[in-house]
Length: 485
Image 1: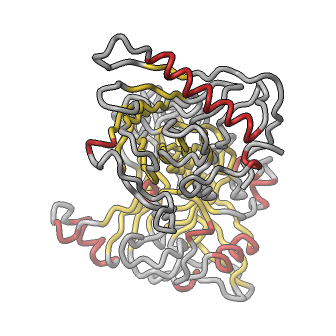
Image 2 (image 1 turned 180 degrees about the vertical axis):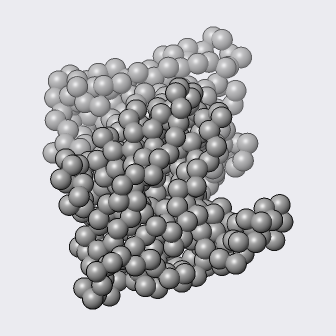
């Protein structure tokens, strides 16, 4: 596989290798010996691949991220301060034409999993008044109340609407609006139902930018609800609480703005539709989100926001020569993959037509994790590998002369895990990785190989991990087209 086109030219450069001495024999000139070895290596590299362009770098990795999506998450609540007198008032009736109801019954079919028809969300109070209008009641036998919570001191939760209350239908055979029956079935769309009439509820003077959310109080039936009203401290009558923060409600995609609101100058940017599920989605819910549909509008409408959490993973493969031999360029003396993983939260605004507009991204604090996996060791000298702030020494875990996963048995296992350890302080752009290698002989000290500078003959190269680029078999030099055009 070709990693990168390289144009080789210019004069032979001096390699950037730092050497340290640990020998007791201070009369021996280790620096001269090391210089001789590196000169042989560099001469052989140029002979094999051609002279090196002074601008050539040896990091061929693109660090393409792998992204895995997590569940949608709720943003941290923002507490508001009350200014003025927050209040909800019931306003005039509004007519919702049949085409809007058609969309609900055709797209939120009872019993279907309609989760993809909308987006989870959280909300903030706008700096203007806004309005809520219930427009549709589904088939469920449960009894419920729609409530609103604003995260601010001295503001009590508000009951906006109860099932079967103030929502009417009209049909071709009737001249008056009729109230739905208790089971809600009469509000299921039929050929004769063509519009509904409902009251508007207006909210004003709530603390701007405070977190707000909706929730349902749900009882098994209307009888249990009535018992709760007279015996609110009896736990057997207590309702279940299902909130928009727990994905029990979706900001729906695709609903049109009713004609009555268009006449008042409202557009898609001012109107949002929300579908509700009255059974816990983590249990036996059908997730049809048609048990209650209500409309919210304002100039602007309370901003619907959505947060996706992603895990982003990216990494590099480092292939290394340890100078045990100066004539082969198999780059398999150490092969190590270094991967970093972290979580981000992507914040979006959700528009009533279902489109998402990206707002900003935040890295989840404390989520960064870096891991190194050694895949092959083709050298016979001891070494200490340092990645960022972390060091790993071969002889602590293996016989230093042992050669592993370099094809000596006729096979290379590309996913082999010879060692795996956590890393801290690795900076991918800096390639802050180095190798301290034992010199030939006893007590001769170590020399350190660092990631090569631009234009220097490499003893370490960096590549992508995926797609998998296998390293070479022992004593088999990497192909010329790794480095040349």
